[in-house]
Structures are given as structure tokens and as C-alpha cells.
Image (cartoon, rainbow, N blue to C red; front, side, top):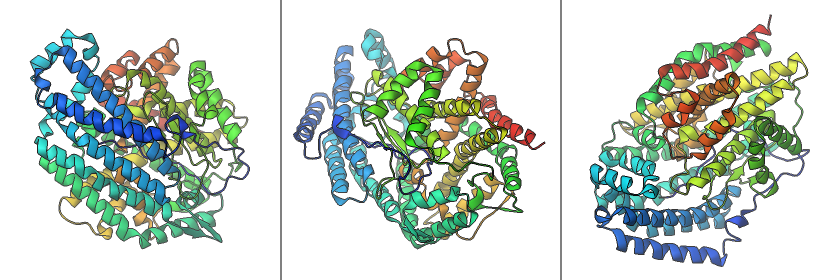
Length: 606
């Protein structure tokens, strides 16, 4: 079943758009002109007939196809994916713009149900592909070069072979997917509908989270306590969503015979469990020299005896709190991209010019930020909640990186363009790094340089340390759920068991912080997604070190890597750079960059 990506960056934003300039909004007409556009009915009708005829032509017959016949089958399946993806992209993006609108919610739900019903007869496709003898499939691929191009698709499908159920059960699970999606929408709509009162302001969750970065410590504390109060009032709903989702996953995993709750994510990411374990262990071992050391520095800068959770993202006392307007943010990121290679800026330009970005914070809009690739015959769309913080500029650089990656990978076609999550963060984090380095080069004073370095270290800690702590939380949550229903207190306890370890001894934790797991969307939408951030950051740190050491010819190799989309394994993609993520020492290289930045900050204290 088709799913859309959800916010993929922990973006902070607040309500209001004063002083930011003209913030762009999406023009979705490249997908469809309107929800009642006749093209939507045309495509749904085509999809219904195409799925039915595909099943009639191929069910029970895949094993008998020759190479040309199998190629035709693959291309017909790819076309179905494209049309279905276009419809769901349009319905999903409209919904994200205003998640509290009943008509948009209904439109998304109706499209999802229809497409699920149409595509249920296609469940046989992957099941029968997995029954083709390995030697026969190899012979078919060798007989037709166009078919051989799809080998990575076959490899990914066949990785699920040991966990495949009967045709009837697979169809049942496919149909049941819309029920699981209803729990995700309950989470989204609950989060979007929450209201918080800080001082005399009534805010949504984005505006309230933004106060955690306010220079005024009293406002930060007030926001943190208000978040805790509102989360506590809604904890039964969030607990029910997590219990149900985790139990549903446990049942499906048990029936499939998957050894761990994480196995499905590792298979989808085309990454070996031992690689993820090496990453996780390297980061946890580095907590003392990364987050613990940095937050002790920050405690001194803030003049505090103890850090509270509302101080974690506080600006430094010497930080200039100026707001960065949209035009300045755009110029900063585009100059950084062009400085790396003019081609990168050319690929990013249409996002600004053609309505491919929705930037403003609006009531009911989905929180966070993401880049959605839609389908390869259209183009990506970027969503931000932009309010002029320096971190918002980095978020723009991040999501534009995703967008550039998706544009380049589109040439692979619908079935080969989608990059595993572990590699999907490469271009986004690289885009951030380029933007940071440019800003650092143009810093006019030591104070500006210190603020930029500290901001980058905080972002890296949020991307690496925080996300691995999230991953440990999920591992513990899903393991505990196998033993029975979890109370809100049970989940709170699991959350706190990873927070102190990751943040370090500089912190005290206020009463109520134990509920802050409740608003993280990844836990609900994409279990175990979060380690992809740490993977991407470590990979980019290693890549950037290669770029600095040997810039000659790097850009061409980099663009080739992005163009590959999902057509190559991480080992093959990284080989031209002399890197190997399966080497445990690889992760220490990436972490050493963060360590080096903290060294520079400590040297500034002398």
C-alpha cells in the first residue's frame, strides 16, 4: 500500500509571519487542478481497470514469463505505481496544508481506500516473484539488459522472501492497512488540534515548541511546563495510539517470523542489522565526549548551576536574536549550493520560482518539515514551518537537499528512484553542511563564529545523539509491549531511561518531561525511522572529509551518487569515495567531526 513520508526534520517554528517577507505556498496544479478535477476521476477509473487487467493477465503466470514478458509486466506495474502515487501525493499534500479540515481528511481517506481496494488484487505480484527459482531469474536478467536494470528491485523484494505469508493472508494485511492509517491520522489530528497558552498567547504545538529556543528563560520554562500539562491531558490518546500500533506491528512481525521489531525497517533500508548496531554502539559510547561535554560547556555559557530541559535549545547569551527574512535565507542557501557547484543551485532554483515550497506557519498545518518526491513524472514538494530562526535556514538547506536528490534520482523511474532512508538523508545533511560552512567562512567576529559552531554542534547532537536515544526508546518500547499493554507511566519510564543517559549529568528533568515522547511523529508513522538521521549525519561527515581532502572531481562523483536513487547498495555507492559503512571504524570518523567542533569551542574558552 502507498504511504507518504511524514515530517523528517525536527524543525522549530512559531506562529505569525511578521517581518519575514513573502513566504511561498504550494501550487499543486502540477499534480491536479482541484480535488474535483475530472483528471482525478479519469485516473482512478484507469487505475481500477489497470489493476484488474494486470491481475487477470499475470496472476499465477509470472513463473512462466520469458524475459520480454517479465519486462512488460514490470513496466505495467511501474505505471500503476505512478498513477496511484500521483493521486495519493495530491491528496496527502492538501491534507498536510490543513489537517484539521474535514473535507481534506475525507478526500485523503477516500482516495486511500479506493486505491487500497484497487491494488489488493496485485498482492500476488511480489509473492509470485519470490517463488521464481533463483537460477531462472538470473537467466532472465542475463537475457535482457532492460530487465536487468530492475535487479535492485528484485533484490529488495526477494529480501522479504523468508517472511512471506500465504497469498490470502498477504491480501488480508493489505486491506487492513487502512485501519492502521486511521490511528496515524488520529495522532496527526490530535497533535494539530492541541492548543497551548503561554503568557497571554494561545498557540499551536509549533509555536509553543519555538518558545524553547527563546532568549527569555522564564518563557522557555513556561512553554515547557505548558507542553507537559497539555501532553498529560492527552496522554491516554497518545498511549492508546502507541499501544495499538506497537501491538499491530508485533502481530504482523510474529506471523512473518521476523526475529526483531527492527528487522522490517532494516530490510526496507537495505542495511545490515550489524551496521545499524555498530552505528548505535559508536554513538552511545560517544555520549560522554559529545553531548555530555557540550552541555557542560553550555551550562557555563548560560551561567547556570544546573541545566533544565528548557535550556537544551536555548540561544547563547552572545547570540544576536535577529530574524532572518525569507529572501536572506534563500540567498544564503542558494549561494552555498552554488559555491559547491552551480548545477546544484540550478536544480534548487525551481523550488522557489514555481510553487514547490510551502513555507509559512498556519493554523492546522502539519508540523515540522519534509520533502515529498511525489512521482518521477512530476517533481518534489517541500514543506517548511519557516519563522526566521537560524535553524529554520538550516531546515531550508536540509529539505532543499532532499528535493535536489529526488529530482536527480527521478531519472531512474518510479521503481528505482526511491532511496532507502539511510541514504535519503545524505543530500539533505550535505546541504546543511555546505550552508553551515559558508556561514562560518563569512563570520565577521569570534562571537559570530562561536554561535555558528555551537548551533551546528547542537544540530548534530539533535541529529545523532537525540535520534539514537529515540531509537533506543523505540527498541525498549516495542520489546516491553510484547509483554502486554503499557500504561502511560510505563511509556514515561522508558522515555526517561534513555534521556538522562543521552543528555548527561548537566541536566535536571522537570516533572512532566517524562511525557515528551508523545509528540514525536516518527514513532507512530515510521517505527525505527530515526536511526536514518544518525546514519546520514555520520555518512555526510565522512563524505565531507573526503571532499576537503580531495576536492578534484568530487562533485561529479557526488551527483552520480544522487542520480543512482535506489538502484545501488550503500557499499556500491560509497566505494568511489573510498568509504565503507560496514566498517565499524567508519562511524568514529563521522563522530570525530562533532568532537572536533567541540574541541574548537573549548579552545575559545581559553
